[in-house]
Length: 425
Image 1 (cartoon, rainbow, N blue to C red):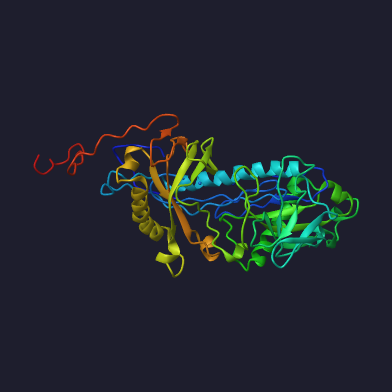
Image 2: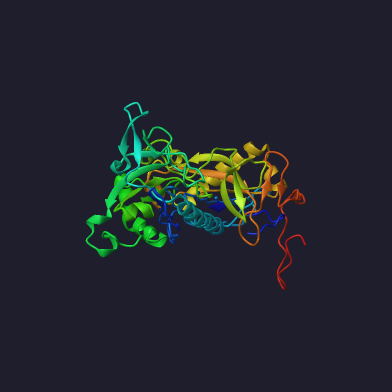
């Protein structure tokens, strides 16, 4: 995330799962690789948005995986930038989003523990050519290219009772990339009567088998830092005891609360950028962005625009500097139009920031980034904003106080001790 140059007159500061007993195969989200740091957890992870650029910050069952953050692009102070421009250091913004992914991983692990796994004996309604359900097939027969849907509940006795194979053009929560039969590996760990693996081992199996499986399945068009994550469906403890050794690698989308989100369409056929529509507010918990919420509740940032970098850069991947040079005026113009004037951002002490696209995302076909407004706090993280930035807001419970107006003309710097007098002095 790259921030805008700070306004000198208004200073500002500044990705495990626990399997449980049950009669179903449980899922662990996988953690996507992050450019310089990977998030490692016991089970699932969540797909989280990444941000980058100049003005202020912004961000089962089968469990989703965590997203990664983009390369840093430092913000620079510019006396000619204008009083309405405020920025947060890109490196800080990206680290914040990495923390979001880490938090999602932990939350997803809880879901897995509660949900249990899937048993070989479970039946799935089979989709017809039109996409509706007709007849049943064994869950054990689901394979690469199948999309699975169910209604999640908090009750292990009722969760996923309507599990069905559906057309991928319909809403679904899991897209199968590969089925791996662990019994094919001649090791005691997977032999008949072997102990049930713990959450850490299932997470390791996900990393060992599913990351490569998803990349192969998508033809290399999986964005490891995009909105989707690598997931694992594994046998329940009861299923394992009955000899079930098949695990399913796939793709899922998880929110910060760890619940799997519905997806539409095959992942490899779409732009996987982590963006939200303009007007979306993303919640905040302990300074960390979460999931979209009503703007009337506490949130970390508000999206003012979505920009398609592919239109400006039809060739290869533009550098972060080139992206920033294009996005700074583009996002600034979008923010001013969204907020209703050039001084609103400054008067509300907010910062404008945007995402950058990294090499792995660009190669996967991701081209879109969000321009957002929020407020970073000195200790790191985001302040809690209530209300849309288009109207009255509070920041951490207090109405913002506009900074003093910037005087007309260009001020001269204070001379260093011993320096010659300034011209005209």
